[in-house]
Image (cartoon, rainbow, N blue to C red; front, top):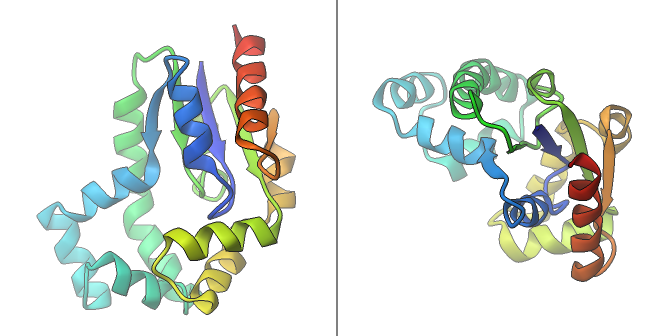
Length: 181
């Protein structure tokens, strides 16, 4: 069973992925795949040639303030990430692909079920300001360019509501795992 796990930035995808991991699912984090690829010399040169930097923080500030630059970066990175994800999931039985851009990048086509983590904007912003090094403006820009929660929900086979307690969140994941057996 290959599960696509998606949700907006700060929705709690990583927490939910970790919970799936406790049930024996291998987690493939698309962001981490992208970060590793960005460290490969050929990819780094291409990104530097286009944006003047391969530093993720600087790159984030550039692309999340200009959607045309974000599209250029996605055009470079998404095919590479896609190829790596396909390699990582090949032959695996229990995998979760964690990706904020699961729908936008078309990676939902590789999965058997889509799980969407939803949260309200207040909780999303609270989480992001704790853990991200971005300003409120950059965070709002990221949220604005990502697929809306309502659009993601149209692809959902399962919805995890992350506006509740951690134990309730775990209970939702446990319910999904039980249903998938």
